[in-house]
Length: 131
Image (cartoon, rainbow, N blue to C red):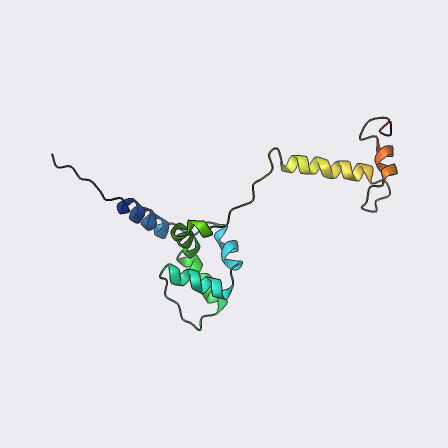
C-alpha cells in the first residue's frame, strides 16, 4: 500500500482555492465601500486581480467583490485583519430597550435630559431614592 503524504502547503493551497470559490459574504459590501481607492488598488494588487490604473472607485469595488479580494487579502495578511469590537457580556437589544424605557420614564418634561429631581421623583430607584 502506497502511502501519500502531502506537504504542508497543500492545506494552504486548498484553503486559498476554497476562499476563491466562495462568494463574498454579505458584510463584504460594506467593508469594500469603506476602502479608499488607494486601499482597493493595494488589495487587488496583493491578490493578483488585474485592473486598469484608470479604473474608477466603483469599478475597483466591483472587482473586489467579484473576486472576494478582501477575504483573500486577510488570509494572506492576518495581522492586518480588522478585529470586530467585542459585544459587552449580557448586552442585548432587550436590555437596550429597557434602558430607553427607564430613561423616558424618568424624563418627565421630555427635554431629553434627566435632572436629579426627575430621577428622584420617577420612583425607578425605589420609593425614596434620596435617603
